[in-house]
Length: 609
Ligand code: ASP
Image (cartoon, rainbow, N blue to C red; front, side, top):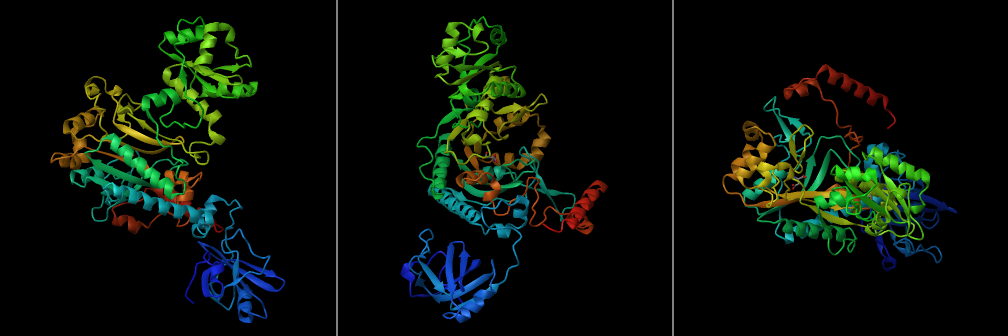
């Protein structure tokens, strides 16, 4: 039997046609001696039916089939009897009387339920991922993912971008995280690394005159996993020659619009996507990835308290700190317990303290510290924070950085839609922004500097002169795209001037020899004519998570790994024999052997899953 229609396809207009539908047996129901077999594929469900007298052969076959068997059913489409039609189902007007059934394969009882209502342990779901994938939710997510990829490819190609594949066995040139290493059999003792991103290759493509490159690229980073990370992940990666940040913003925005449209969510991205400098983002939201949905920005109140008699604030201001405040609309009814909890939380986050004020019905401020403040100060706070009766005002006196960081976190704790953590960013509207002009460096915690983005990021053109005198103050041409408090992607204008690049490595404390050995191939290529270039990479799994309204990137990846980087389906990573190791010049240490033995023991004992 050859499939003529998918299971979601038949309509009243097909009545009278002889059809063959193929799929999984979704259910077998016995209604007063008549058997109803729902056959399911990714498009939907077709009801097939056998009456013992009218379809005796079909009936016998239908009696034998069980849930999740794969069958082909032949019959002539007819209307369902009046009153039994199901308007909620696209195929609900018709049914197929079973003239013949071919069993294509049988199925043992499933180890996981396929109905969406039953919560199933995630490890068990991943262990049985091929079955899990039959669920409508994952079908929908993977199909959305494919549609979004196709749409974004088309959008970028319309702008002259060319998809180029870059190698995945590369020289180890760590970009911040640890590399995954692949030992080489042909040169025992040497390793390849899996790329953390195609960064160096895409820059080399610019030297090669590709002009505009993109790729939906797999990347690997060996780091401790967080909820929104996988050891292997996908980026929409791009790079363009003779491009300014404005060009990159426009291309990424176009790609995002195409992505949202393909996911059936066009119109959700605002007409204009706001931009904030990194400094403003840190001041106003205490974060380099602000969630704009969570209440108003933080306000600096140093002006309100200039010359204050309130000792705690005066001391902070004198010491070069500041006072900042944030308004929680309608938060005035928080209990004393909650308010005490907020103070504790603020201290835990590093603040010296936290001052709260409740705006009363007559707009006066009720607060433990109110008696220490002048009327002008109280009025100033209310005006600066745009306070209304019923609001809660929170003030922190500290370094500017700490005050904003703490208030920024409380802002998320108190006012983020549905209280979602950043990773759970779906479901409450889409609020994107660009954060631009990141600092070039950050403190490496050991008295030195480390690139905030990567060492190929260009200093801001207005700050190049500071490279020699005050490198920590240099801004870069690096920019992030943020949605709902989640970093969706980042990129930068690259250094294309050999002298600036050399200075960069010098500031990073890298010896000439180290630079040569790690990046010599890039610098050599740059000596033979390199166009100015800029690029970007979008975290594809995270974007899809938001587009599919999911809470975990694992719901948008066909075969994801667990938080510990394991694949419960295939058992990766797994030990290999000593002979295999010897081939690539490796030997197991006794410690590794003990771990491998313990793992093998757990697996042997783990018969159920
Ligand atoms: N390669 C960078 C990253 O993976 C993105 C870029 O600068 O294009 O974060």
